Image (cartoon, rainbow, N blue to C red):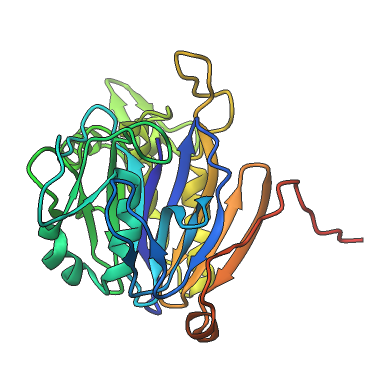
Length: 331
């Protein structure tokens, strides 16, 4: 599961935001990977050295293996991975002359070597994702990815058996299966959504009036399926007043994410495991800041990719967020 969206403020700040919805406990925290980080693709290939520093959220599996679930790099390219169950089609065998990756390594490669969407698009032909259970999560992860950069464009990569291509996302939202084209067509079913109440209507000699505000949202779906979350996120993104500043943008995005956040117990898998929102992340590209809210503590934590951090930090950093709920006393 997961929901992600892009956003821009009036004063020109660009964002990527996401919920991390998963039943497998990731124990994710904000993290930083330095320039020239040495990592080892799992499929027995030589060590790779990144070009650019990365900040995001994820987990460490070994001294050289980090899962980057979402993040941005020093140039403002940002990415989040989302589940694409039953739809992701990877290459069955490794391919000579290309970098062969398992799905959960793709975000590190994309952010570690590319400055922009245009830069990434030119290099996609040189990498392939292999259908493999050798990844750190011990099972093939069906994923697709949402990207943005400082242009504010939103692009999607959906591996459906025809290589990797950046697809324009005109609504700036992505959830899970089905694919983007299906979700866009599904929006045609919600033309009756509007933020203002419906006007009065005459039935013979009787005039019907709205009982209260909100009648324009009666058709807004309330469940946690990917199509329902996609519609709610697209509606919120479209109707919420555009934020003026970066701080306002973070606040607006957290409210939008709350609208699609899944509490524990509300969405169970067939084996009884709960698929829930383990954290919310807001990636602020122009200020190079990552805002993180975990499930058990609604405090908003922030990490910043400063020039000093980029130039002087040579090893990865994990920033553990408090797991117990924090509060601010007022008296």
